[in-house]
Length: 244
Image (cartoon, rainbow, N blue to C red):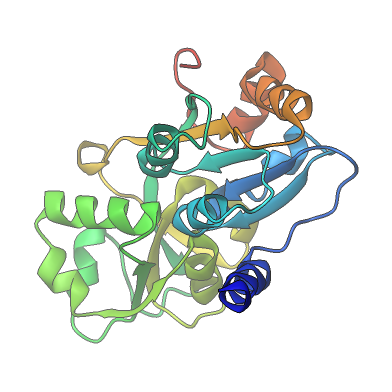
């Protein structure tokens, strides 16, 4: 049994997302779509960016996170009801777009064009928020079957989708609107109709087992502060009327 426990701990350590060292602040596990903006809000924090589901699993297995931020309420609410998080708050919103290479080899002009045969499309895995949101949009538009036949890869976080499109390895991919700015020189945007957009709400919460409660509280306070909300807005995120 001791060997089994040791093996599990070793696997968790090996598969945990690598943290970005940035001083002596809290350790923040955050959705990959927050990679560009969170370090601007708090330079003292140490960040681990990955898919929301992967991060939730790491926290369930005892990874040393102080704050958890996800791209949907699903996993924060799950961990909250499991007694692992303090009450989550909504701090940002987003929208989905279709990202295509700047040369647009697939000649994609609308989301409906993604059903054309021969295209290579990248989407998020069904276990992560970007994959769930994409499925909701396709169902709403009535093009799920037509697009699915062109899917060549299902990525575990949104950065994988962005990378494949920016490198020209795919004709298109569904990503968050905020992911387009860092690769604007290599990509173009195809809009998704507003009426088809699912509600995308980001939540964050303090991990109850954290040994750095004060630092975690300060981080959350920075995110929901006027300055934090302004930084999120400048990065393209939408904002809830008030943190909840």
